[in-house]
Length: 152
Image (cartoon, rainbow, N blue to C red):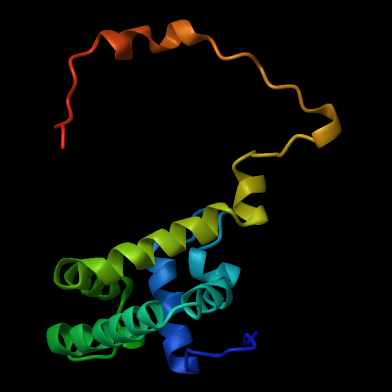
């Protein structure tokens, strides 16, 4: 379903769907991330800034370029293992793009009602919601722990 501001071509959209399906593949009753229509919401999200548009257009092009350089085939023609290998290379060579691609994939997937339902997540009804008081004693082991971070 095209958004009012279509940014991706059909081939870019297909590449994105395939990449999402490699990041979160279908397993059992759970659909792959690309099969949930996340490309539409991503296109809407990246369309908000020129920087995001550029990051994704260049990143998607880099996926196909890497696939051809490493395997001699376009990304959509590769086996699952070939697609995974290509994505791993892009993760190394273009970390800013790949990190944003992963973030958008996970955000879209785990906020989608279908995976939420399949993992057993349900939102309480606002009128019947009563939060369980937090047991602060659970924090004691962490409070006693030596800091493992570096002060900036």
